[in-house]
Length: 297
Ligand code: NAP
Image 1 (cartoon, rainbow, N blue to C red):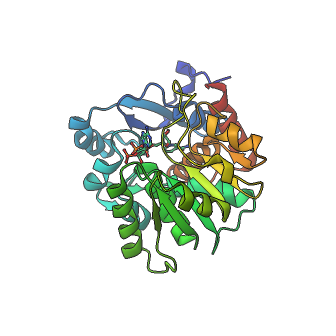
Image 2: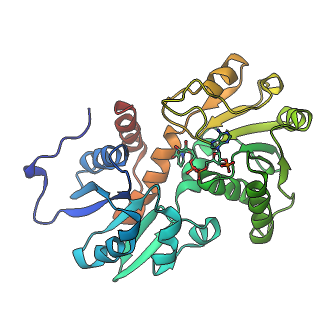
């Protein structure tokens, strides 16, 4: 059940947080964060704000004036917000996007918690990616957080994208920005079935960062050689609606371990929650956040 908010829930000392997006009405973040605030009995309320791109700067500047603690940013604001905040964390600068803003001493601090959200579920599963190969499909916004994080973790990365130039630009950027990078990002085209099959065969992780397979197009699947899937491969789809995409079903049928995007959504939210409240949600609350997301799917 989603947390219900009545007038009684809002008190004189209630602190406001929220999400700016356009559209924003399908966001699962309000249910997820409000479930956590309720579980920990914290006087916070999380509200969705439909902010159009032309008003993003005004809306962000208003946070300080209104005493709003912070906001998440979702489509289409993540990149534009980086140019507006007063300061950005190293991760946000590297990835080129902001998904969490925190107001501190009248300043807007921008962070990007997607890379943490992506990697934490892998850590929980005990995945050791250093010096192991990972295939990443897609080179859009979500892929940037994934690829930079995997690069910092020491993975050997193969990047596949429909638009080759976008993959090449990301690979070049990772090579330039990640000083500890030992293995340059390998680019593959979808059409290079032989090369891609070889890379998947020697990988322990395959991540879909594209929206291919997302509701309502859940019959679709990215064009990867399924015959190269093997039981030591973990297939991770950032999509969380449906929970089991066609890619994950095909992977499960080939005895791969699978992971949906729900935990990533929860952990990127948990990291934002920590920025705003000063405390990271304990495991019992993480579970409540996940249940709040699942209840709405
Ligand atoms: P984006 O910036 O628009 O990037 C989309 C990517 O998908 C691009 O690489 C694009 O390739 C590729 N793509 C789109 N349609 C395709 C097709 N028909 N065939 C092959 N490739 C195709 O989007 P995004 O913000 O990265 O989001 C991507 C997905 O990640 C969405 O499903 C989103 O829900 C999910 N996501 C999940 C979380 C989470 O917390 N679980 C967080 C962020 C995002 P081109 O470059 O060729 O256009």
